[in-house]
Length: 199
Image (cartoon, rainbow, N blue to C red; front, side):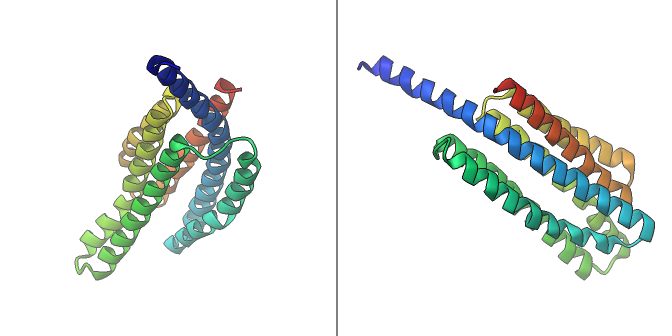
């Protein structure tokens, strides 16, 4: 086998891996899109009807529901595809998003607790949703770049930049939960489109 043939074979294997990962990721996008939509709507309704922001603690229940579903799908997929560099990159992107989002949330909470200025504390607390939605869109767009998929890239831009534009247009209190409903719907629709593209 010549060097050119070897490169062609490697390129073909990477393209096949991308298609397998896209097919698999479509399911994850749909499941996490539904979960994000349901949890954000529930928190929004509870916060709006009671006027209590502590309903945000329900976000911690989302991984308790999502990760077992994620694991279950992963076990079913293991028989179909093996671990490769592209799957590790995409997993790394979303793990990085989780770490950064949790860090942003923790810093916002700590700063709002220790900040002596009430206006400063409110400003920090209310900017959290905008920061997380931007990180979410960025993670999705970078995943689209890694998988060479325009649908995921565009969805990431719509979620991150579009979500940030909506954030500044919606307001600063309970309505910010609707940003995550928007992100969940975009993620779910992305999953459907990617599944159709990679049948």
